[in-house]
Image 1 (tube, rainbow, N blue to C red):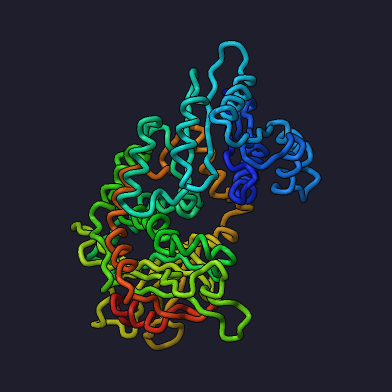
Image 2: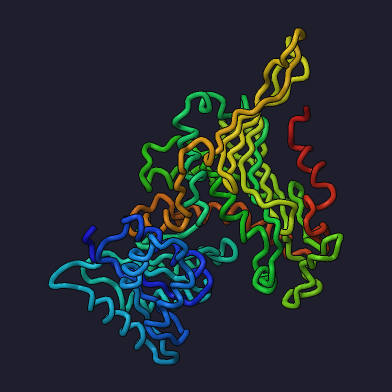
Length: 476
């Protein structure tokens, strides 16, 4: 626990730092999982003194319990702040280097982590200044970057090429916060720790798999940003592809970062580009009661916007294990519920002996209320041989005593500090994922006659959604 470590939060006054990074760092601190010598430096254009920075952090972390007072005091002692001086070249980055060097005692090494909570369009310029002025002479250096990693395949490859001269792949930690979620981390244990699932995990037994992430809120004032991104880039190309990869990959040789990321990249390369004929897009309008505005009611959204706030598309994996199995990917905003889950529907049983049986389903609920559910057939109590559908339900909050489930950013930051890249998105995974979505994006955005279907805020999605999904499913 004595490793000299510095985490620099670039964009220290922004929403990501306030809502995710500071709470996560504090929780790691109170759990005793940070090095005693770890220091936190905020680095941003916002003019703040150290005291102002501490006040800002105080407003971001949980102070509800008196028992936390000692933890909070010790945590604040780790923190300091540097205001970036505009139009002064490397001067502020030199100041940052000097601040980090002031924490070094004698000849000890120092590991440096630079979390770029910044707009992606400045990643390259900032990474160049960090490499030139702040790279550790003794110890490891690492940049931590958030999605989006490019806008399409070409821009993603270009971003990697521009980062590559200064930062090796082993020094770039790409955050997809879904990989830090407890139930996502549990997928491999479910698959490879339970032979009963492994025995049916193929096209001979599975009819279809639905992977969905839905939200019951709209863009909520972020329409100007979202209009340049859309639901496909915001959710499907990253979060849903990681869930698909973990669900479909072959068993890795080990759970090391190298083996795990290699298997994920390998299966993603087997997914052909998505097609418009297997895709349904939508854009929400105001709610029927008029209480919630439509997407284009946002002043920052063009009135002729064709940006999709909803999309469902069907992918296939071209290998022997998954041949012919449709993977129904769905994501959208302003829907009737917020939920992320993987729903695995097995093929039907024969009707030769039992009538009116339902297909078995394994449901992995990622959020909210983490759970694993197995829908199965059982005999209806009574004299007749009749079947009913029942559920085996592992609900974490009820099954695990006092579950202390860490937030995703806690897990990811700890991995970054420990040099564990198993939950960092590799460049190979990223390239394979963009190859799946780029043709579809160019098709949708390049043809003005393709417009998303309207759906009401708070509904289940566009008209025709149920029939679209049903066309790829076993019906019973």
